[in-house]
Length: 102
Image (cartoon, rainbow, N blue to C red; front, side, top):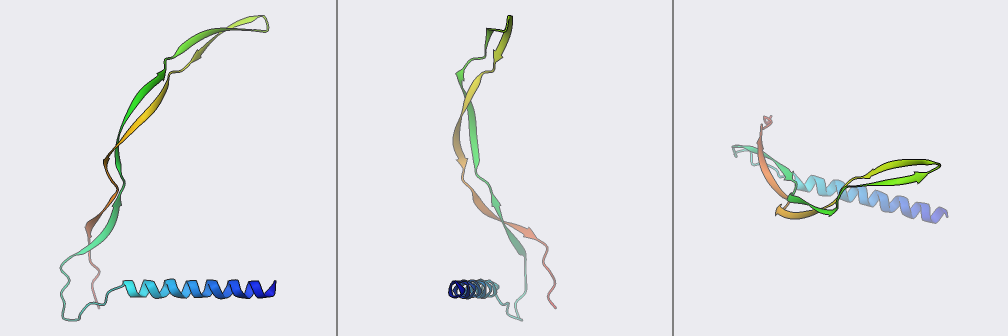
């Protein structure tokens, strides 16, 4: 048992170090002579669907006898949805304010 806990701890430490290294590599270093023209943020736009309802069964009313009483019971209509993809999910670049460099 102690061996497996040690192994698990080592694997988790390695994964944490790897993700931290990847995060530092994803940040680009700017040339000090470069001028920032605009800043953008990636925004995910969800997919758009055209949805229509298709009637499966109409609304209905039935009489139900129970315990010497007669009940009028109503069942609502049942629909199913037809979905058609109009626009897939995509990423857009939205302009945001830039932070000033020191």
